[in-house]
Length: 120
Image (cartoon, rainbow, N blue to C red; front, side, top):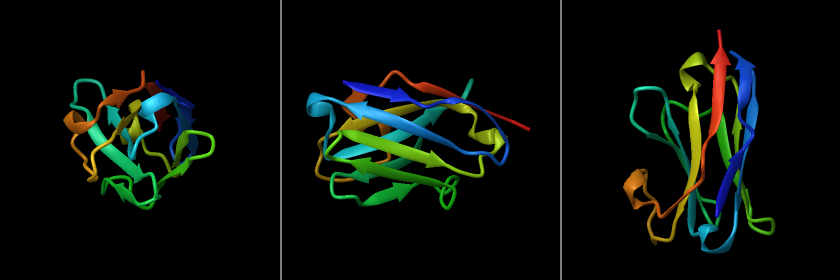
């Protein structure tokens, strides 16, 4: 119900745009992006409400922008000025709670992940 795409290999300082296509109930009140680097825990990146309210992790604030197109059931993550430490598998996720949260265990729907590699 969630399909992430857009990952790839990019040099430091470059940009990528990730896309998350949602179907059914997965296009929910809140849709977010998480990432997981090798041997690290999954971490919150950004989240957007159905109405467009956003929240970002401090590590990506000012570099990443989350947006959504409700008519197309799509959520995007524009990533600029990428750094090697942004290298990870990125997952889109969604939940229907009435509050925004950064905690992954509150998210009900998960996509399969798309890999982002940032070289030095």
